[in-house]
Structures are given as structure tokens and as C-alpha cells.
Image (cartoon, rainbow, N blue to C red; front, side, top):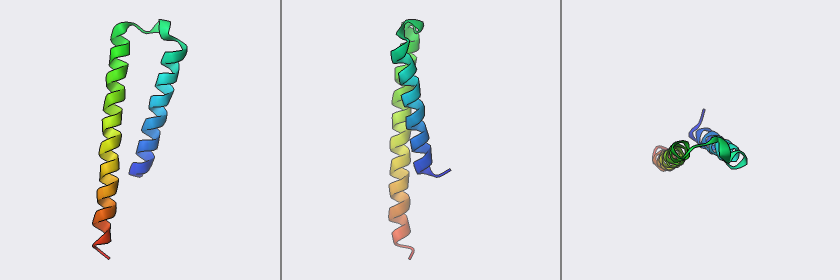
Length: 65
């Protein structure tokens, strides 16, 4: 799986989780909502990290040719 695919999958998972939470908010307590928000932040940080890695790979690859 490429880094780009990992980012897309991560975003799809986050959107799915957020969709469930907005459709059925009564099933979540405050702690679960806080954990979900923290998970969303962590996923976004991971996406940023992967994006930077993709950029670094592309920049690193230019000098090798």
C-alpha cells in the first residue's frame, strides 16, 4: 500500500466514524466523544506525517536521476 493510499484510507475511516457519531449521538457518552476527538487528531497528525514523507520521497528522488 502506498502512502497516498494509507492517507485516503485513514480519511475514509475517520469520515465513517464521524458519520456514525453524528447519526447516533445518544449512544456515545462524554468519554467516548473525547476519545473519538483525540483519535481524529491523531489520525490527522499521521496524515500530515505521511504527506510530508511523500513530499520528502519525491524531493529525494529528483536528485538520483
